[in-house]
Image 1 (cartoon, helix red, strand yellow):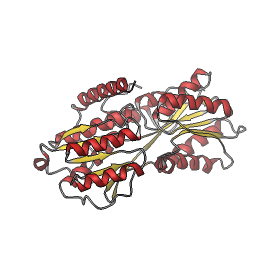
Image 2 (tube, one colour):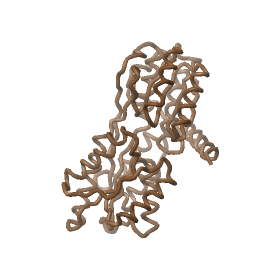
Image 3 (tube, one colour):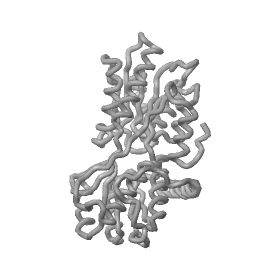
Image 4 (cartoon, helix red, strand yellow):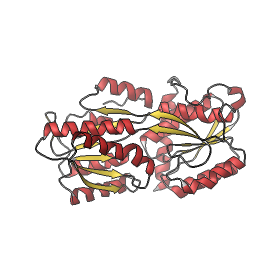
Length: 351
């Protein structure tokens, strides 16, 4: 099964690469790379995405490769498969291969600290992305809390407007064991809800288990345990889409004449699948936040190449930020959403 998923993911990355070949590099610099292409030519950059079985991570990896290759780098990317032992193995493999730089997206912290130290001891520049470790190395962060809070505000506001006599009960298909998801997504989202509806009650918050298949079962469990749930948050697009599948299969997920009938579903990533549902006038999937694969990739490549070129200290703990964008049915035009998607994903989402 994993081999099949990897083949599909690599095919999608190849297709995206072909699509992005026609797109300009664009994007602002983040960490001070950009120049020095002659010094980078022929060097190898190792990339460990957390997974390639997800539209956002596929697109972001594709942009990283495009930007890196424009600077003369060769990329060696190893799918983390949303599995920490695989991520550790990939890091060991890149160190053994003697790559000239590494970008690491880990699930958790403790198990990669030694590997990062080993990379630095071998003279390999390494940066982390999204999940920061205690190591004294540069870090690229996605600042998601503002957009997540805004999603909670919108979801609560629109539910109260539609059903003022039905109290909010929220449930989350979550990543409970990832502190950064709690800090940047789940907790700000809940705070956004409670800023509008202080009496909103928690239904169930359950760990999704890492895949769309496991998230599907979690959403089934949530509906069985708390059928009165009326705001659902999926903390990544695979989980929100799994939630959507369950809701639609049991006759929920309806949006009629601008009114959510049984719930408002909120997602993360703003992949094409999500955005089509957000702008579908019959779907209760009405809010998401867009992670910016192109902008993120630019900051990541600028940062790691800045380290490789000596413009950024490889052994100083410092943070370079990227930001998400909130989208919803009520406040975002289809035209603006499509323009954003084409810019970030390099293809027309056709929604």
